Length: 420
Ligand code: AMP
Ligand code: GLY
Image 1 (cartoon, rainbow, N blue to C red):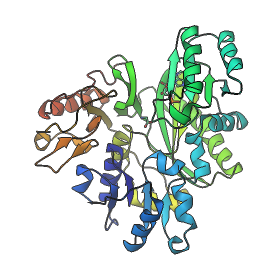
Image 2 (image 1 turned 90 degrees about the horizontal axis):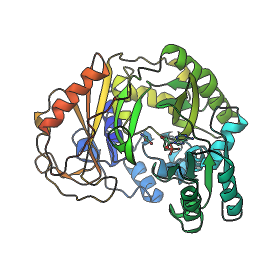
Image 3 (image 1 turned 90 degrees about the vertical axis):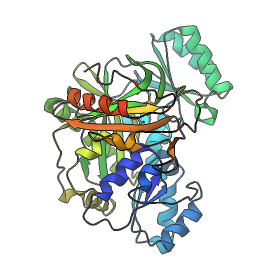
């Protein structure tokens, strides 16, 4: 059973579907893309009790949790405590492990404690707001302000002007700009470099590094405009050569996994390490306790191992028996969004032409209906993924496929990979 409804989950289900041993796949709640290869179930994933009952009656063997919110809310602990579910395998960390994403303050403390390279920081709230305002005037711009709690990737402000930064700090702390997520604010040093995403599978003790990817978070071309959930992605990452990958493993991944074990975070699942390359050095921008979207859509198709086997081995603590086998072709993904996203947008626009796409995989996100009556139902609508010898050729295929897909307001970035 897979929890989630985005293109990331469609990609997860797609990989499970190809496994030799997968018998039946349920997705809660899924989308029209997952419906075609598995069974969607309309269960409220916030209601862990009802979910537990469904898991029992359907005799689910393995649960994979896609998004962070159920993890931060303790879904894994809840299910692991149920004596009737003692045999259920779960890929998804405990709520304590999920704090690595659920609290920026917790994750920064963790990095500092375990000597993991990251930007220097301080945390402020209503008790020391004046100190925070003062602190800003002692550091140099750009100012990086982060809501402590989860904010779907939108809780980060990067501001050049001191007065504007001080005003925003007040808005976050006193006027709940990001709701409760922003009652504590992390202010950290600005890191100037190029970002990449690293995904690690952790079985509690051992780890397996998945292919590196790079995503494009801003809505506008040239990485301008508002942050989104992600508008495109590519894998592999040309600047992550073997020397740099080795550095990441030694300086970031090993101390992270060691720290997770030492601090007893009880971590079984995917760990997403958001990295930035500054000069030749990797720094951690953030941890997420799940796979990234839209990176998953280019990472999972590159994994040649039986994906279900990897998931079972993760949940049973036997990853050490595996090495990762990676397709060295390049994959590129461009996200089609609704006009207006990440601001307000209209839903219910007819989607045509997906069946004419032959050179790309189409992963669904904000869609509803079935393949005859498909309509838009979200901000990010589809992920269009292609494969070729390098990311530029793969992108060409994706952009060709995009020409075949039509819906009113179809919006996408035409410059994915521009900075590579
Ligand atoms: P986060 O939610 O922590 O991943 O931050 C969202 C985005 O803000 C990141 O992907 C970066 O593009 C940017 N960002 C966050 N922290 C920093 C930093 N310390 N220096 C530069 N950019 C940052
Ligand atoms: N692509 C970034 C994220 O999933 O948070």
